[in-house]
Amino acid sequence: MGRVGTILGSNAIGRGGAEIVAVSEENADAVVLRHGGEAYTPPHLIDHEANLRRVADAGCDRVLAIGSVGSLRPELGVGSFVCPDDFIALQLSLTTFDDARGHVAPGFDPRWRGEVLDGWESSGAGAIQDGGVYWHATGPRFETPAEIRLMAAHAHLVGMTLAAECVVAGELGLPYAAVCVVDNMANGIDDRLILTDELEDQRARNAAALGDALDRLLPELEA
Image (cartoon, rainbow, N blue to C red):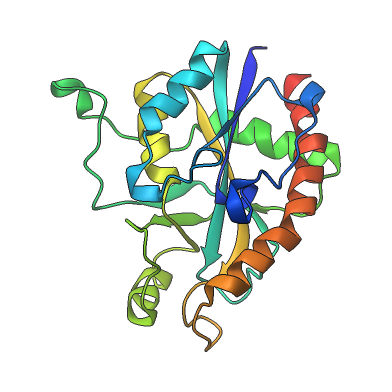
């Protein structure tokens, strides 16, 4: 087995840029903070290729991405874990290539995704939904209730980073799977408008469960 590179999202960064999801050093081959450390990089400005090359340069041959998402479905409440199996990102046009190699069919790696789910189950990390569609929004603003209604007809989760990261990982030859953590109900799903302070509080409450789950999961993926 090779090494696993873990990319943590905005649910790992607290107010002021501090890392709030602690992953035990002995359980992590390489950890990259997607949005940077003290200087927060917003979703639309992230250099996904640079992040993923850091993972590859550390000797990792697979990527486990952790994403903070909004739920588009009432049954997927705050604190839920989801391992998506597809995404919608019609607006994305990024590629690391400047020739015909960019004409590829992207997606989460099925075999690696299965290993993540098996490891999650055997580690006792708790409940996780197997499958779901991730809608990649451009950001950095949140979506309007009308936009969320459109998305909810076709997807389960909404976020601003994972599809772009997945595309680039595939082009770099890195199998890519994701675990999403529901940190908020998307704007209007529960008949309430999203509040930034409330979202940050929910992320902080989810951080301990996420850190514990990763400390259980990562050794299983290295076995």
